[in-house]
Length: 161
Image: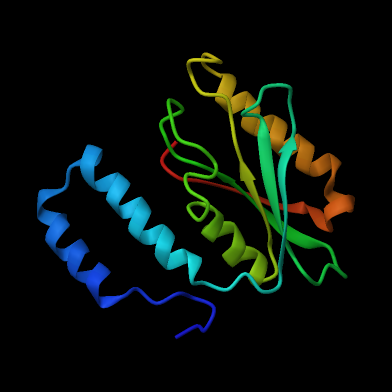
């Protein structure tokens, strides 16, 4: 097993087995966020630098976090991560660990991770969130040299939304 990857405790495995057949989003999402955040807190952050709450637009949700490998002697690929929530809810930092765990993993493996926030549908109708994501990509291209990013190796990944 990867020593940087936290182990899922037996009691959490048992809880997941019990919850699975009777899943309720309103009850169990909060429970799983709490339990998995605790697991991710035990993981390693070694070799990762974080630049948090960087504005790429004027709205308070137009912010991103950059997760950098310690060794930035070469231009690196970057993955831009878009949180879920159907463009109606959610946050790039669902908890202090969820979705940051994805970007920390990438940075530990030599890829710059960028966690993108976007305006929700109540603040920006369609295609506002899509425009925000495009703005975050443009921001990344503009700041690539500063963060050791190879502009020709940008990747986009989303969760749900």
